[in-house]
Amino acid sequence: MAKLQDPEAMLSEAVDTMMKVIDKDGNGLCSKEEFKAFVQEKGETPLKDEEVDELFNAVDTDGDKTTLTRDELLTVLKIGLQANQQSRQS
Ligand SMILES: [Ca+2]
Ligand SMILES: [Ca+2]
Image (cartoon, rainbow, N blue to C red):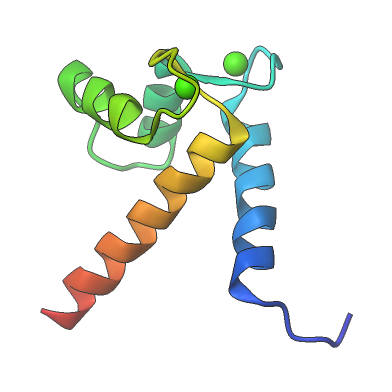
């Protein structure tokens, strides 16, 4: 337990935790409604429908464009982290 975790492992854990919170109906996928509710619960600015559409299209790898798998959610997390770092630098 004292071992330092590599960033990938930490991200992987974070995405599992996030998915548990987001996935209200427990189908293992994050729907657009679930994602929007999650953003609002976190107290972030609510996303517009087209923003959610854009995001889901951008990270979609299985082609359904309506739900996020665990892997797709991981991409969302990575994008979010990069955005955070960039805004800290400027
Ligand atoms: Ca779900
Ligand atoms: Ca998808």
